[in-house]
Image 1 (cartoon, helix red, strand yellow):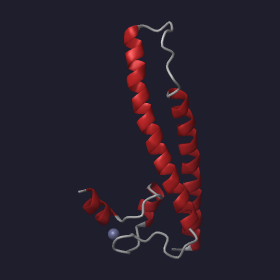
Image 2 (cartoon, protein in one colour):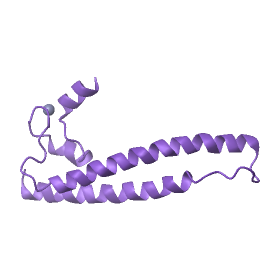
Image 3 (cartoon, protein in one colour):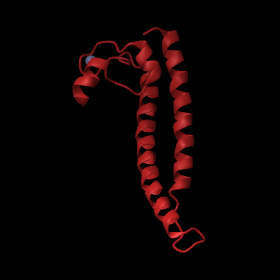
Image 4 (tube, helix red, strand yellow):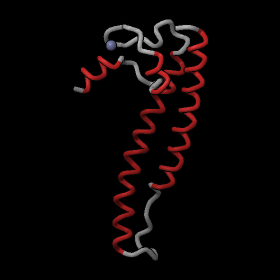
Length: 114
Ligand SMILES: [Zn+2]
C-alpha cells in the first residue's frame, strides 16, 4: 500500500476512534442505574429498562469496534497491513476506507459469516 493511502487510512481510523469514544460516553450515560422510585410511570420505567439493555449491547459493540480500530491504527505501519488474514490478498482500499477495522476481504468475510 502506498504511503499516501496509509496516511489517509490512518486519518480515517483516528476519526472513527474519536466517534466510538464519544458514542461510548453517551451509552455509559444511558445505562446508569435507573432509580427504583422516581417520577416516571411504570410503563416508562419498563421502557427505560429495555432501552438500557439495548444501550448496553451498543456499548459492548462500540468497545469491540474501538479495540479493533486501535489495533488497525497500530497495524498501518506493518507491511502486512491491508492484507486479508485468510487468503492474504490485498483488501480493496475502498473497503478499508469504509471499514478500516476489517482484516478480511469481502469474499472471505462472506464465507466466514455465511
Ligand atoms: Zn480473503
